[in-house]
Image 1 (cartoon, rainbow, N blue to C red):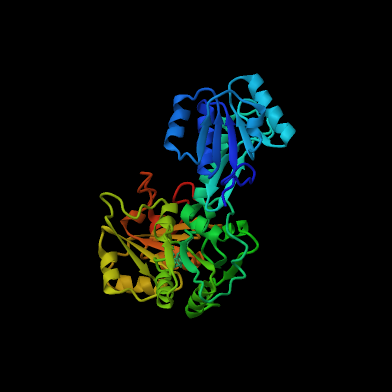
Image 2 (image 1 turned 90 degrees about the horizontal axis):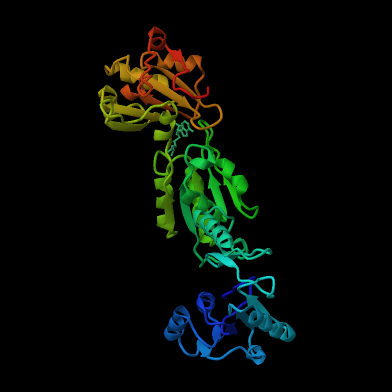
Length: 433
Ligand code: SAH
């Protein structure tokens, strides 16, 4: 269905346009797009109107080359007047009123009985902008473009609600979108990710993603918390895969909201495999990974010209492999350890045993971009002691390497003996403890 102006369906309906100027031409173009049949009443046409008439099928648009008569509107569903002559426009309006036909007066909206709205469109939705005051087309157009942008960025709650939740037809395949939610706050997720959330029927989320955005979504959305915390795995990965595939097979759009990036130590690969194996369409939207977002909080660039030109990301849960020990040895590599707080003593002992210098700078960033954010600077030799005395907890990222040396960016290297012995902030300027 095509609709204009507050929901009128003008497809194949006659619209009479009185006047042959550029305003008529612009409105005519719009009515043609909506599928209307147009008749222009005007002694003369301007270039734009004549050109439009020339390129349009005769059944869609005709021209009666003479002045307006009352009876011209007899068979119209809608009339548009833009003659440039106030008396004529008034006569058109009067003729329409006596026949109960809606009339748009392009020169004086207060005189007519209908107005053209500036429309933003998305999917099958149309949002019209109208003013009840005197016409200001540029103002309406600027509101229209703002609404259009909100649509495109997914900032409007335009998710389909009817007929989707009830859909249990096995034939109708839904989809799964793995969304990288970033390190915590909603404004660190991507617009594409947020948009996918607003479209979802079901949201399956973790503990570390941006859960604050869930409150914005409609109450028809099913929200499933499968959050794991260390030592507490309430929902197994197999069960999560089953939830994703099962809901999608019921025709639902499933958003799998994950912390950071789905494909960085997030088991997103396994979820994608499960969807592929089940024939469920799966899409992945990247996210800001804590691999970079957490060091950044402490003022650590994971690469820095002249200091570090490679990054080694490792799951700290496992005993360090030779490649990790080599990276720790290398002055030019920044090692970023995720999921490493509980196993930190073993990780450090293995590193020191392998001959990694005990003075290698280490920074722990706990709760990056989240309440309770804290950065601790120290060295490999003292990090275990510091982490214990400061009760470091997950989620935390451990950064090892020259890029973690305090003052790298500020030039104020406040390294002194206390740091070497294990020192607690104020390390990166502006970081709240
Ligand atoms: N896919 C995620 C990582 C998941 S593994 C990403 O790309 O960020 C979980 C680990 O990520 C945590 O144990 C912790 O090491 C790290 N992490 C996630 N969010 C964090 C945050 N806000 N602050 C510090 N570390 C975080």
